[in-house]
Image 1 (spheres, rainbow, N blue to C red):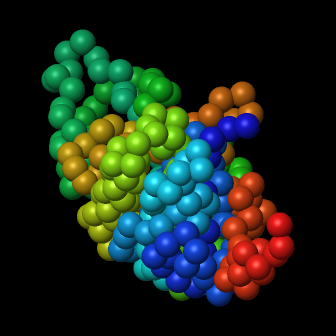
Image 2 (image 1 turned 180 degrees about the horizontal axis):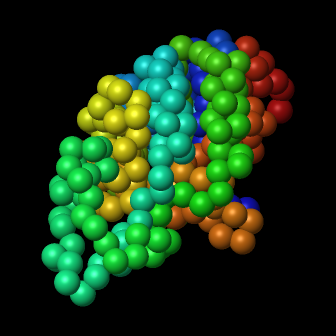
Amino acid sequence: MANRSYLYSLSNQPTSHGDRPETISGLSEWAYNVPFMYRLLMSGDPQLCASLISDGLDDSDMPLYAISGPFDAGFERVKRFAVIVKALIALPAIGHPIPAASEAPNPGFTARLRRWVGLSHAPTVANPASVSASTSTRGAIEHLPGLLDETIVFLQAHRNQYLLLETIELDVMSESEANPLRALVEAEMDRCRHVAAAFDALPQDPVEAAHVLQAAATEKSATPLDAFFGLRFDDHCDGTRARAAEYPLGLEWSDALYFDLFNREQFEAQQNEPY
């Protein structure tokens, strides 16, 4: 079985394994990775909280941690991100033209970014149609707009006060002691905050933001925009059956997860069952 990250919506921020929410719903699970959309959803104000998946390893009472954050703040960012990505889809795909022998040296990232957002003119090239496909953020986009719409509908239907991101299955692949496991969760919290900073650095205008997002996903830029590097904005944004995406966008949603976590009523009923 693949080790996964798990995302839930719930009505509290757990202070202990037994501090169960009144309501809880699964949202998504992902094998061997934490997708970008999980981090964007968690980016409102990620906080350390107790894991609801496990209360210890190997029957120990070691504290295990997860990440909690407000649902609405992350959801608003996801909705705006979907608008920006749809604007990006309408842009020409970015590639690097093959220069003529007499052309000046390839300009740096800042100069290219200025061209992409329309602040300077692109140089003349010998063969404008010759573009390196390896640097493009996009291939076929037949399904991506629909996946974005389905994301918004699903999250709206499963809206709650808080989100819970569980990474314990991923973390135990490399650590087994309390402090290193906590450090891995705290590092994931920092990634969520990094995504928040990157998103807030995008221009307010969706088309301008789309230009910047496309450029940052294609070529690694300075922090915080480097949080977008490696994302794809096409039908392979989450990989294919044959190959997983190196940095998945994360547009697969389901409330039926491997760990179907108990709410407070279910948890207390289980605790009271005779053995």
